[in-house]
Image (tube, rainbow over all chains, first blue to last red; front, side):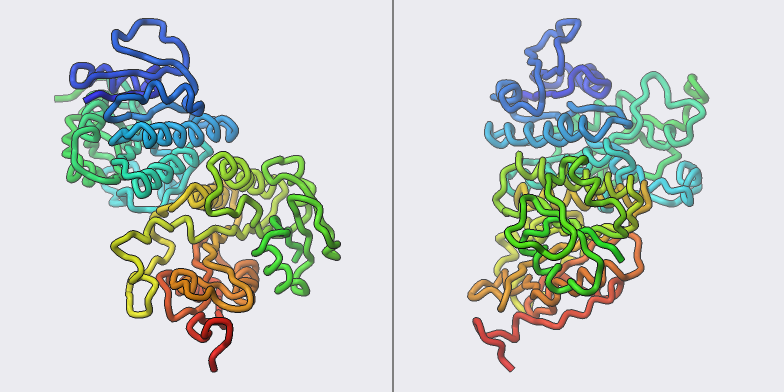
Length: 251
Length: 251
C-alpha cells in the first residue's frame, strides 16, 4: 500500500514514519525542506495550496494527514489557513485522485472544553467514571481545537459525498521515552510512540467507513474511551502511564 | 434590548426584521448599501473584517448573526471566508464588546447528508419516525453545510471559553406566502415567515446557555424534532405545511 504522510516533519509524523517505515511504500510531505534525506520520495509545500498537494497525492492508496499548525495557542488566522483550509485541500486532492482512505490527525483539543472546573482534576484520576467516546458533540477549548473539530466535519463530508474511508484519531499527549511527569492530565491522555504508530497502522488496514476514535495508550487514568478503537480498528495498546514512576518503567 | 442583525439584506434577515421590528432597538449590518433606508441605524461591511464589525457590535446586548454566503452550492473559498471566518470575527467582536448573547443562523445543510438514498423520500413523509434532534454529530451535505456546522463549533467555543449565551437555529426552508409546492423535502422543513420571526424572538429572550435547535414550523411531515425548541426556548409554531393545498390554506 502506497501512503502519503503529510506533516512528516512534525512530532506525530516522525513517530508514525519511524514506527511503520517498513510496513508501507511511503511518500512524505514536508512544510519545508527536511534537514536529512528521509530515504523515500518526498515533497515540500503548503497543504492549503492544491498545486503543492496534488503531486504528493498522485498515485497513493491512502493519506495520513497530520500537517497543520500544531500549537495549542495558535491564532485563528493561522489555523484557518493551515489547518482548516489545508485539510479541505488535502481531501479535495484525495477525492480528485481517487485516494481510498484518509486517516486524519485530530486532537484532544477538539473536546478540551469538557474539562470544566467542576470536573477537573477528578476526571484525570483512576476512580472517576467520566468518559468521552467520540459520539459527543465537540467542545473545542481553543482555536486550534476549533480547527481540528472542523477537520473532522470536512472528513465526514468527504466520506458521505465522495465515498472516502475516513478515520479521525483524536490524539492525546504524545510524549517520547516516558509519560509526562507530575502532570495528571498528560498521564490521562498519554499516547506512547509505539501505540501511536500502531493505531495509525490499524487505521490504515481495518475495515470501516467513518470513525472518530481516541488515540491514547491503555492508561489507568483516562477520560477518553478506547473501546471504539479496539473494537473497530483492532487497536491493541501496549502501554499505560501507570506503569511508570517518573522516568522509569516500574515492573 | 439593543440587537444587531447581520445579513440584514438577506431573506431570513428581512423576515426577522419585519416580524420583530417593534420589539427591539435594532441596528442592522448589510453587505452592501441597502436600496431603501431601513429607518434604524445601519452599517455596511465585510463580516470577516473586524474593523467593519466592531462599530456595528458596539453597545448591543445581543446579535442575530445571519450574514454569509447563503448559496447551497457556494464554493469552498467563499464559505471559508464569508461564513467561517466571518462567524469567528463576529463572535470575536461580541466577546471583546461584552455582548451577552448570539443567535446564529445555522442550516439544514449542516445535517444534509443524513438524507441518504436509503432514507429518502420516506423521511419526508408523515408516517416515518426518523428524527434529528440536534444532539447528533453533523453530517454536512455540501461546503455550505460544512461552514454552518463550523459556525456552531465556533459558538460552542465562545460559550465555553468566553461565557456567551449561544443559540444555533438550524433553519429549514423559509418560503414566503405558502410552503414549497410539489416538494416533499421542502414541506418537511418549511419554516413560515411568522414562525421564523417568532423562533428568533424566543432565542433572544429565553433562559439557556448553549443550544442547537431546529427551526421549522409544526409540519405534519418532519424529520427534525422541534421538541427542544419548544421546551427550552418556548417556541410555539403556528404553521404547518400540511394545512396548505398548493398556494391556498385549507381550513
